[in-house]
Length: 109
Image 1 (cartoon, helix red, strand yellow):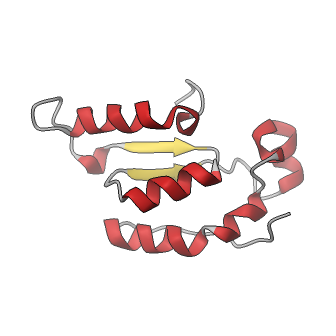
Image 2: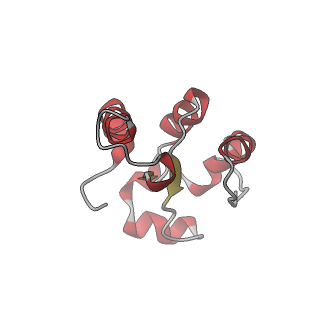
């Protein structure tokens, strides 16, 4: 964490996770690998569609879009309301990999 937005370097991050998890690599359990994003909607959709076995953390940093805009410039293009368009897909993905999660429903502007 703190090294930039992983989903802006999507393929390299997935490749690194695969290498960490591979039995001939580090052999780290997929349950111990979490990829965190501030909410790059197209990449979240891609990640869930591809069915990766690693945990996905979405760092909203605030439940208020106004507050998010103050602390996270990326919120201008990926607002908290846009998560509405991916909530069902995220919940199905969460169920598929066997974890629990919360999805906030809002309105995409």
